[in-house]
Image 1 (tube, one colour):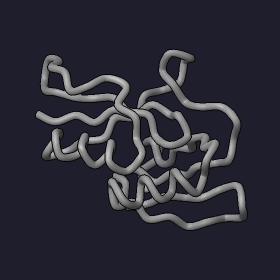
Image 2 (cartoon, rainbow, N blue to C red; image 1 turned 90 degrees about the horizontal axis):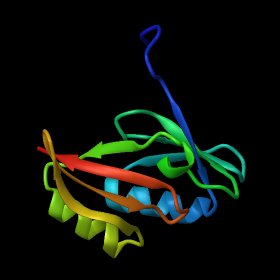
Image 3 (tube, rainbow, N blue to C red; image 1 turned 135 degrees about the horizontal axis):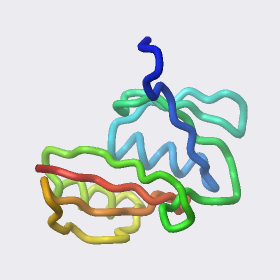
Image 4 (tube, rainbow, N blue to C red; image 1 turned 135 degrees about the vertical axis):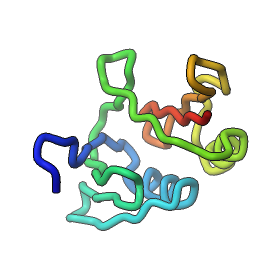
Length: 115
């Protein structure tokens, strides 16, 4: 483990089981439960966890935006939609690539980008 590097991220989940199913199915994440209100995830690029909460993580309210990478942006967008995610911003160009934003089943905002 490297000192002074981001090591773990924790995010709220109003619908913990729905979030776990969504991220397992769409992105291949692996979960380990620690009681009924917390589930750690791995196989995601950065380990972290979801904790049961009644609020959401959205950049508009000051939260950090977690951005995932995809080799096939259109395919990832289709998987997000078909498994219960809501597209917040369709694919758009930005300097360096293209991306889209989506809400997970708990209402947290994420982005996915590609070159």
